[in-house]
Image (cartoon, rainbow, N blue to C red; front, top):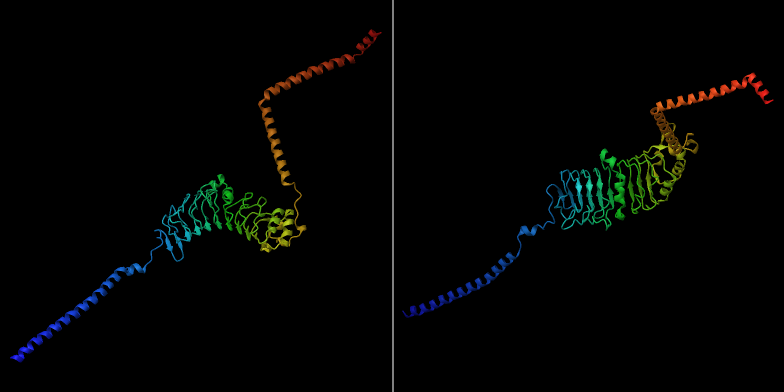
Length: 420
């Protein structure tokens, strides 16, 4: 039919147009979705993994035998039987504890690292059985302010241990606190080693410790302080010499320690402080002196010190100072003594006593030698004495004969007649 034939082509054209429209729409959708997916894939590829973005890179690892705290910037290697300083110390360390180990020797550059330990400020090496500290042992530690070498049998402390390995060029040390308490030398080594001289050489070397503020030398059995041992420490503020065996301070000068704030001399063997020492201590503007538990000898030599104690305010707890000798003055408070209480026995001065003792020894030795010579030559001496006796007897017989002749009256008359 014509009507049906006419509707067929029109319906086909409509379907064709719908198909074309669907293809156009499909192409537009695909064209818009592809760029967005590509951009999303590109952006996802450019972003790092979540795990990588969540954890920053660590500044350094912690040595295996140690405990580290990056927040506190502290590393503790305590009682680990270490024989050398760990090589992999983290560069962030500010406080380093290497105590209770077996570090017998501390060589030059023992803390040299790449990168350097520029922030290390406090180093504790106590209780390590440390016997030797070489020159330049603490080089490459520009920020080191506190060093503790206590409780070590230190027998060889290089004079340049705190400066540098090059003895000709002494670099100033950044140290502000040096702790050398209880250097436990064996008795056999103390006979051949002067701990006083060794420590003094390290403190004097090249003015390297001019910036030192605190020095602790407690419990070292020091008998004396070498002359001018403190001369190169003008910035010293705290000096701890307690629990030693110091018998006097005559050869020690405090004159240049104008910043000294505390001087601890407790538990020593001080018997009296002489006028020179008293004047130097009184000239220091900020010092506080601690003198407890010393065996003060309260005799005529104590007069000036007692007068000084009554006037000064720099001695802390001066009311606790008491006499130890002589027996009659034991436990008397120094501040309660008068000049009439302080007298000396009328005995010879010590120097004169020593002279007489020496003279007696010399005379005894001469007498012993003389007796030994007589004993060895006893036969010759006996013969010599017999010869002298015989000579004396012959001489006496001659005198006796002449006396008899002169006494005979007949010979006397004969002599008179002959003259006539």
